Amino acid sequence: MNALPPADPADPLASFAALRTPEGTALLDELRDHDPARELATATRLRRTHPAALVSAALGQARLRQRAVAKFGAADAYRMFFTPDGVEQATRTSVATYRAERFAELGVHSVADLCCGIGGDAIALARAGISVLAVDRDPLTAEVARANAAALGLQDLVEVRCADVTEVDTSPYDAVFADPARRGGRGRIFDPEAYSPPLSWATAAALKTPRAALKIAPGVPHEAIGPHAEAEWISDGGDVKEAVLWFGDGFRAGSFRATLLPSRATLAAASPLPAPPVGPVGRYLYEPDGAVIRAHLVAAVVEECGGRLIDETIAYVTSDTPYDSDHATRYEITDQLPFNLKKLRGLLRERQVGVLTVKKRGSAVEPEELRRKMKLQGRQAATVFLTRVAGAPTMLVGQPSKRS
Image 1 (cartoon, rainbow, N blue to C red):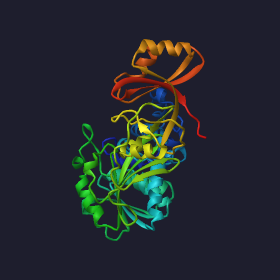
Image 2 (cartoon, rainbow, N blue to C red):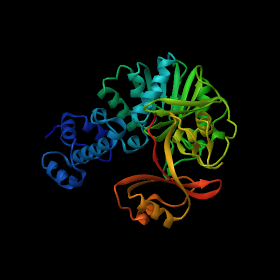
Image 3 (cartoon, rainbow, N blue to C red):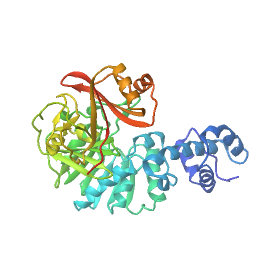
């Protein structure tokens, strides 16, 4: 039994400190691959040889590490420490790395990371060779960030400070990165002025530094962005992860950008694009990446493939000849039907479709409900799009089209 005082569940800092003792470290190593479904039996067994509070803290941390693998990868997640909010709000490593490298490519050597959370962005910045001041006002969160920098061997590049970010002097640093809290007691916060600190404060702080980046929710209204930022929406593996406002030298104020990871394909426009043409469905349908849609750059996809929209309110692009787009997935359309489930079921039965991918834009039908009603049988696969064409509810049937 460890001679150190046991973890105190009423004192988060003491509980966290206990996890970093030799006994706590050994417990976490033992729990790396534990089965959450057997947690009660595991806890009962461990409490025979370890303090109950330490066992509870270790089991909680083991659960968080397992959740964090999706964002940080196993190699880092099982060495790092987390809080529940930290796992939820931390940036995925691939996205944080991309942002850090944008800073590094512009010659940034030092960054003040405001609202640093458990240190995910500070870690990415440090791995890009940038010195970081990581600031968070919550004592436990700051201590976790400090422990993570040490666990990954980056303590010489990351200084962690527990402070109110609004009182930090950022003038000694080449750049500022801010990630205001976007969750409250009732869940997600959608009003940028209800962020903590508010977006207006973060923007004012950004404009005082040579370069800055503000992480915001991808659903932020474009009118809330202002004229001084380059706004970038980032997706990873097709899922939109965040929006970033970039300020200062090296960025194009007033422009909008969509970046797709892991390819890093980028689409950008310096000003609002003219409304794209609308026309009938051609042989090919393009589904723009979510980051492209959030950045209001669907018109750029229309232009690059020489196509048109199928409806002025729907973000599906069509063309008569194939185009290999880095910013949209291409499908070959075989059938166009007015919305009629009976006709669709008959078509799928005739084609012997047993595997159906359902995509929708502009339709209230739920994909799982549609699959259930189709009573699929067969070895063929197909994709159905539930959408509108020239305002009319429509079903488009096809399959992914390979790049040439």
